[in-house]
Structures are given as structure tokens and as C-alpha cells.
Length: 170
Image 1 (cartoon, rainbow, N blue to C red):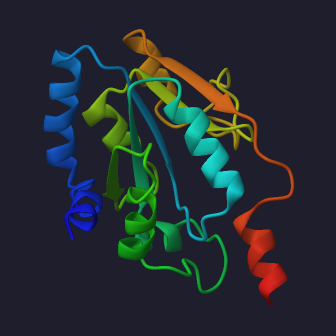
Image 2 (cartoon, rainbow, N blue to C red):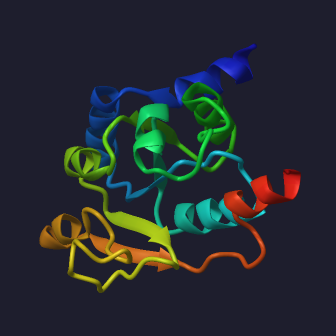
């Protein structure tokens, strides 16, 4: 039961995440932030998250709430797994330090709250894109760069996507 409570303890509110971030900063630990829906976790997600975690000392994952996922118009009947289920699976990954659910369409407010040292997204985004209207723009990148943080992309693993997985199951 102790291990399960440890996993549950990684799923925290935004205010708790802000307090943890302050503690990490005092200890001079570099914080990596990424976000996503992580609806059906697959090897592409694990590879991506592991590479993101290796950029710093602490990995914080912003998780789109169920409402947020639906607002993104991903597909009918998405998310497949509830936000609580998705958060639990993410928190069970050893190199994920914190999971923070957000209700907005983008994690911009969460990024501004946490001020990560590294903002990371998948290779389908462009760290140098400055046009917020572009599909490859990384939300919060201008803010992170403004205080000297780094914005980085990680190549996606070919052959893995939640959409492809859902199509295969059907």
C-alpha cells in the first residue's frame, strides 16, 4: 500500500505543484515540463517522457482534463480513459515526478505558474516557431524563453500514436 500511496502522492493540484517547484528551485534542481492527453499510453509516450525526464532533475507532466481533451476535438468518444485513470498511469512511471491536471485548452497558465527550466514537446512541434497561430507553435515557449528557460522538441517514435492504436482496435 505504501507504493500505491507514493504514486497517488505524485498527482497534485496546481497550487501544490507551485509549492513543489519552489522547493526544487531552492535545491537547484532543473524542472522539465511537458503536457498532453496521454489517453492510451504506448511505447512512443514512454520513450518521449523518458527523454524529456533526462533533460533535468524533475519531470512535471501537465495532463489535459477530460473537459480539456473534449475541447480539443480530438475524436468522438475521447478521452477513452478518464483523467483520474490517465493521471494514475502517468504517476506510476518512475521517472515522472508530478502529474498536474489542467482544465484549459492549453497549459499556458500552468507553465506561467511553474516557470520550468525546460519546456518540452514532441517533434511535431517546432521550438523556433514564433507564430502562436501555427500548429507547430509550442504554447508558453515565448514565456519560457523570456527568463532564460529552454524550449526543446523530442522526435516521435515512428509507428506509435493513440489515433492509430484506436483504429487498430476497431
